[in-house]
Image (tube, rainbow, N blue to C red; front, side):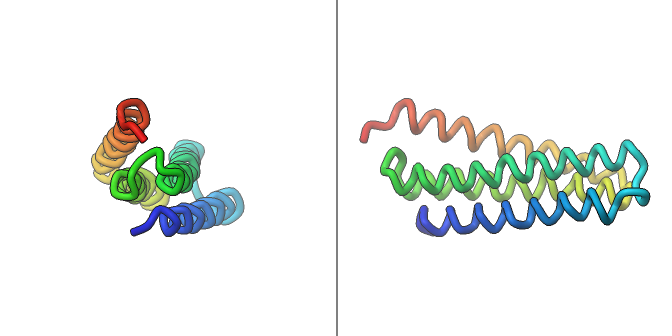
Length: 127
């Protein structure tokens, strides 16, 4: 996928994150206890943050700082990270199924790898 497409994917991810945040603030208030609401809010925060990261990585790929291939790999890691990290937290908050918390660190690990890959590429790749 091209870097331009990743900017579009990131924008869609941002749109979904804002909708999820609004749903949490308005649709889930009174339905979730304080702890579950805190988990849900954490999912929204990481969703928004890493969706912005996908947009950023797409722009970095367009700029030529990183190759389109490297930018695509990083963006894909961030996307899968959001699905695993935020997705598991959204489900945990709404359903209360505790074992979903075991999936969350997989997404967090992908976030760390993606940002490390971006740092490596930006620091050690010559244009």
